[in-house]
Image (cartoon, rainbow, N blue to C red; front, side, top):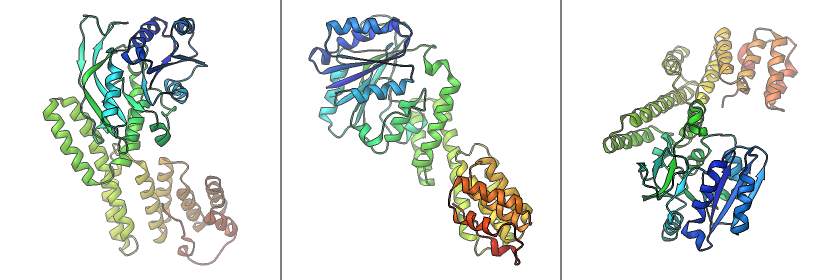
Length: 413
């Protein structure tokens, strides 16, 4: 059985057409389609409309909640769904009458596949139908690729997936308001198998009033958040960069789409710079024990040229670098430089344990004991029981003889 999740909020003008579209699916006529409507606190009349349909049609489940996001509603619907397969049915979109049947057929003939998606027609006419002769454009998606999904979603608005994926990978991220489905596809992209059905199975209603198009700034921000997270997971070597660049060159020639290519290359180049930074920092760590101080400072200048490029994706490398250089300068008794690096680390992450420990040691070496205690106490709030902070507080407030190196025990990630 398939469960179609319908999330509705102030969609009274679309809900009848949505339910009619689903009821006319060949799977529904065979009793193999469940419709789960989640009303997320709508102020319009969807509830009465849905209840009228329930009187005539048995395979409709209705859930009403307080106001919640679309991904909260989807998750709620999925958890109550009885189907082996799940699809989202947006209230303003429509389907080819046998769309769900064809998607299930693809699953049954490819048992290792976890997600299927088809091509679509597009309309700007509210409550347009699949059968109407009104003008439509079309979108033909590309076959799934776990590298290319990092640059944007190409599954379309009407995929179908196995319900048990949520047992393995969790549910949609309810902290996202616009791109939670995209985040989920990227999250599972290297572990699940996707299949593109090269046939038009749906009708997508393009509206400037949709959440995605109404707030483009939010959409772009969430896209960047997802990309930053998963680029750092899935693009971890220069070989990955080389492989993906080759794919983008093929896509550029095949699609003749400079806009897509340029946008993707910009993101990939940011990641490439991030990896160069990472590799430089790793080299610095490896050499820091045996290199002369002057050589380390020279190497650090190359790293800081990369850091100055604010296009670098991952701040974690920068945070660690600043802490490493802070330790290097403490070892060489250049306390003002060490302080500057630890303070720069905190500008990147004001909860960075090792930066507070480093500043505590700098203050201690400069006999600023009160400031040193404050830094150690802050470190303990971040990591209760941290042994360095505990020992630091024990020794603080007393003048202990000896040089700086005796107290230089700040760890680095």
